[in-house]
Length: 373
Ligand code: 1HN
Image (cartoon, rainbow, N blue to C red; front, side, top):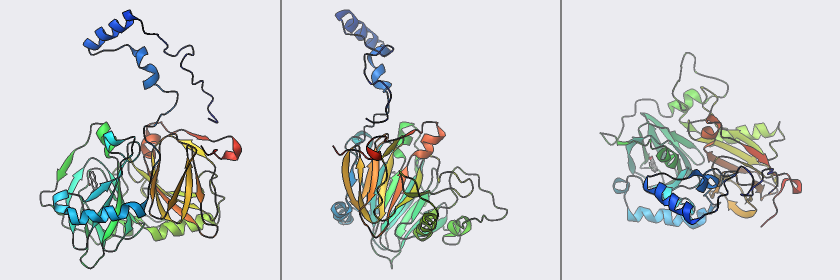
């Protein structure tokens, strides 16, 4: 593939290349009996030349999945199920129930008047609203009302519960959590709230009204937790910001007009393990291909188009979800010549960056576009 300068042959000097002999095989068996092994038998597997994702690129088409999600309403209650969720099961990651890499995602549905009881866990979540009215989430006593393309954070360790007001409509949303990652770190705790629900202790939407004012921060207030105090990020100011930024930037050749959601107290990511961005592809825009480390789950917030991921075309339209695994080549195409398309992206970039694991590379050949395979 373009851009890789490494020698990928396994027989280069300095790489493990030991042939099996009866004596060595007997030796390996003996080591195995001592819960040990010879590094040269696994070195090339555990130290690949470059990341080898087990995840495969997938598009989850909303028009196919929606009716199945709605069917769960007839089959289980939120009380019985805890959360009434259909999760996105990447064929390469079924062992850890991940949508991509170390990120879990699901589609949750709730009818007017229903509530899902309060709990907390070490995993952090982003809940991105897809359809319906009257949805709300309570996070540590702060109630947030939610509409389409808004998202709410339920960070690591915060009590959270969801509901839809009695005068609302059936609501569907995408949950995205770092569960597979936290489980891989063997650090996940889970607790049910003793009262199963929280008292709301503040004005509704107070955290967004306090912290979500562009260029202004509340005088005299400090915030030192590891996650953003702005628990809800709304669609209208997001779309407005992208439109304004588009007036004065050429955008990235790889991402179009892209903005990252930030913790207003630090300008860092919204949570320590999960990041989020929204990117606008202008009418007819076709980005150049690149690849980077980290796992990326895209949600089509607006418009239609397609992405080419590792040489394969994936068509998408509004409300579809698709993933780009770590180190996969990808480029995006807005399918409309007259309207913009917007992609919400949930990712583990904060982990990649904080641990010094982030790398990116441009696709050099063919004008920056992958040949279709
Ligand atoms: C969770 O807390 C929610 O709060 C949704 O809605 C999905 C999947 C696994 C573990 C916790 C929620 C979840 C979850």
